[in-house]
Each structure stands twice: as C-alpha cells, then as structure tokens.
Length: 166
Image 1 (tube, rainbow, N blue to C red):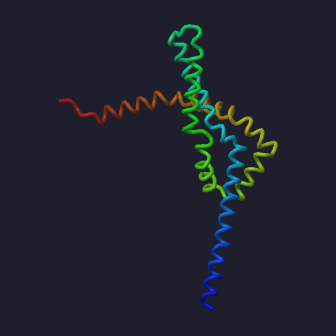
Image 2: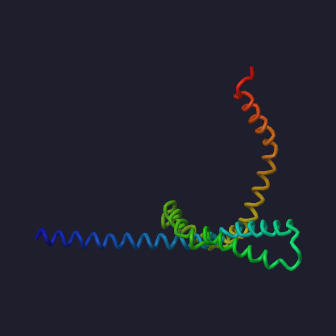
C-alpha cells in the first residue's frame, strides 16, 4: 500500500508539473503576443536610425569624394549587424518575455492583448511614437528654465564644500 501511495504521489506531481509547464508556456506565449502587438520587436529601429545618421554625418564631414557612398553603405550595414547582434529581437525576446511575465499575470496580458487589438489600442500604438517625441520636447522646453538654476546650485555647492584657501 505505501508503494501505491508513492506511485500516486509521483503521478500527481508529474501531472502538476506538466500543468505548471503548460501554464508557463501559455503565459510566455501571451507575453510574446503582447510584445509583438506593442512593436517591441522594433525597439532597435531608433538605434539603427541614430547610428545610420551618425555614419552619414561623419561621411559628410570627412569630405569624402563622390563615388564613395558604397563605403558608407558598407559600414552602415556592418553597424546594423553589430546592433542586431546585441539588441536584435531574437537577442532580447527571451528577457523581454521574462520581464513581462514577471510583471503581468496571464489574464492581465490577455486584457492588454485585447486592448492593443482594439481600434483604440491600434490608434494608441500609431500615435505613441509622436506623442512620446512631443512629450520629450515639451519636457525639455520646460526644463530649460530650471537648468540655469540647477547649474548655479551645483556651482554654489561646489564653492561651499571646496577647501578654503588660506
């Protein structure tokens, strides 16, 4: 009889583990679905654009002769590959899924997915880059008022804590 109980316990544990694994896989799948709807697979795009701009600017500043554009393009392609090898979707996806599954339950992710698939959610995603950029501009403009004050405070503190000269 004790042997039967042990077999039953192992069977229950196996079934429970399988269910937990299935739940974890389902949770991860929902996280990935949400991340794709939220365009997380495009997170590197602004980095690519910034690096492309940096190379183009350096190319222009160097006074490169005509006909050397292929060199610029070759280096831009190499830079894109370097960026992708560090933060391409295939590199960051597992960590992003882990981040979202640890912060959102599976039902919450399902609700987020439902929202992002709705007309309002789609509009939100369409408008988000512009809203983020404009919000940053507004904040930067307002912050300009405080920068001189903060710089003065920084200098005052530096003057106050500096050793006094005899």
